[in-house]
Amino acid sequence: MTAAGTAGAGTPAAEFPRPVPVPDERSAPFWAAAASHVLTAARCARCRSLAIPPDQVCPHCDATDPEFVFEPVSGRGRIRSWTVVRQSFLPGFNAELPYLLVDVELDEQQELRMIGRLLDGPDSPVRLGTPVRVAFEDLADGVSVPAFVLAGDPDSTGGSDSTGGSDSTGGSDSTGGSDPREGA
Amino acid sequence: MSGRLTSSNKVAVVGYAHSVVQRHNPRPLGALTVDIVREAIADAGLTPAQVDGIVAATLFPSAGSHTVEDGVHTVTTNWLAERLGASPRYVAGFQGVGQVSGSVALAVNAIVSGAADYVVLYRSLHNPRGSYHASSTDAFGGPAQWTAPTGYFGPLAMIALPYNEYLQRYGATREAMAAVLVEARKNGARIPWSYWYGKPLTAEQYLAAPTLTDPICRYDCDIPVDGVAAFVLTSADRAVDGPNRPVYVSGYAHAVPKTNNRLPLHWPLDDIMTAGLDTARRLWESAGVKPGEVDLPQMYDGFSPFVWFWLESLGLCPVGEAHRFVQDGRIDSDRPDALPILSGGGALGNGRMHGIPQMLECYLQLAGRAGDRQRAKATLAVACQSSPHYGGAVVYSVDPF
Image (tube, rainbow over all chains, first blue to last red; front, top):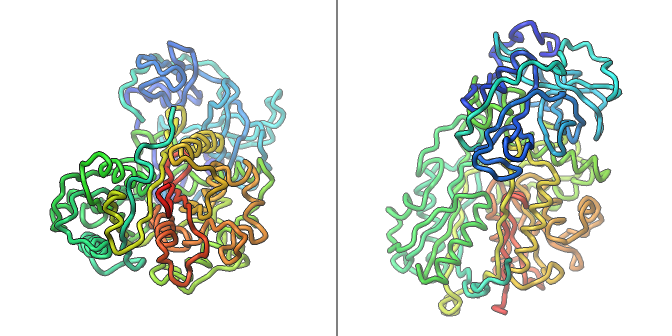
């Protein structure tokens, strides 16, 4: 069973549940948006650049008061690298093995990169530059984590997947400000 | 700007000791460390009472759920200082990655400044029982909240992404990496204290191993071990009075990575190479030498792709060419015309001793103490550690030029 098959349907069947994120003051808006299947990135109030995750100090302009605010992003991007994980070091992933992780550069900003599972499966035809779009895995009530699915033609929404992952192009509210406190 | 260090060739390595490298040593790590450090001090013709500096790095490099107890899983310099019987004036730990090269820098600076006259430098590594990296954590706060819940966790995935990025960008293959493994294990198989003593690896064996985190297989990763090594350093003036030929520290440099724009443990290839090229530029400037002058460049290989990344960062081959450079015997230490980049076996050929195999090979060859493995010409050496964008490197010379 893959998480793709259970996305939106509660916790994947496994002897142990997959680990969940523990939001903190800075990350809470990101996870709140993710629970609604909206991908967000943090925008610096000083230089307007995006960051994932937000640091105490803006990684682009070095401002110590970046006042990062999470805002929705398209969830579209291109694969920069990938790996198929065949041995897990984490609880809850054995039932998912093997799974494909993709390193994605989001369309919104050069070198704005995220890592997530590609829910199309470990044998998916991926190459450098393959377009993907965000999807979400629902790990528990109110807990969803971003993942990706193949996007097919970047100008169409018609991927061939049927993974149940929902795209996040919808613009729900931007979830308020974050208060950077602690270094990564 | 950087430039040649004023400490260049003012400090020398004058003695060493190395434990056997085992999966599990029956002796506790702390007691083993005291023994090996005392052995190194004796090798340098000294007594513990003459040693007034102690430096080390104590990173316990596991992503797993292990308690870390001083003297058991790691040995801090303060733990050792209480038990060595030395007369320490300068006791310091290197906090960063590049544990051995960073410790060398601490030792050099302490000696040149007069903070200490004889510094012992050591690295104690422990392999805990149970899975090395496995975690039982079911909820992640802090930096790992951004990666672990999606299944990105631990160092294999960390290195797999830039490795695959390299393979895809330059049209390289796992088959090309076989040359690195065969060379490291060939040399490790000749080293009596190595975990892999007497156990070389063929390209066929390497390629037959299943991948764990594509394209990484078990042989691409150094095996966790119990092991301790120690060196003694002193000023060039004092070094000539010892029983061994001094090996001079000509320069060093450490990476200053920019990672706060990245997810934790996300190392894109361009990040590695951009910072790595800067590390190498400062390294050559610090020693006042050029890459073409080095006849014993020991690459770091805790994960095999680091060998390619270092070769390219150091300018020993063009960027994107390391996977071709290592072929056709060009790194075979048995060939006089080859570049011996893993003649000490590295971590892949010894076990997870961090930067120790590289430093030790530089020392043994330049001091003329490599025994059957002694090379006819070994005059200028480099010991690398960790990733070129995270770790560091040290230049050693047989002459205080």
